[in-house]
Length: 148
Image: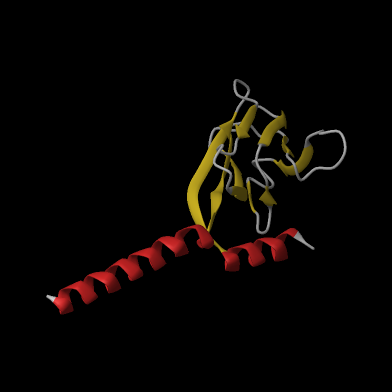
C-alpha cells in the first residue's frame, strides 16, 4: 500500500491536527530533527517547500533526509539540490515522513529554509464515547426535568 493511499485512509478514520512547521539549515546548523511527541498518536511530517535564503551564495546546496521511511542502514537520502541562479526553490507534494525525521544540509552554506506541516492523527473513536456519554446525560436530565 502506498503511503499516500495509507494516509488518505487514515484521514478518513482519524481526525488530523496540523501545525505549521519549518526550520533553517546553515553552516552553523547543518541538521534539524523533527521528533514525535510521546503521546501514542500517529505523527507525520509533510514537507512542502525547500528554498534558499536571499543571501545564499550561488553554489550547490544539497538537502538530505533520514527517517523511518528509509530502508536499511539509516543513511540520509538526498531530496533536493538547489542553486540560487538555477533552482532557488522547490515545492513538494506527497512527501510524507514518519518522525523522527532528520534533515541535513549535505553541502552548501545556506541558508536553506524547509517548511511544511506536522500532522497528528487523533483517533475519532476516543472522542465519540465522550459525545455519547454527554448525550445520555442530557437525555437523563430531560427525563428528570419532565418528572418534576
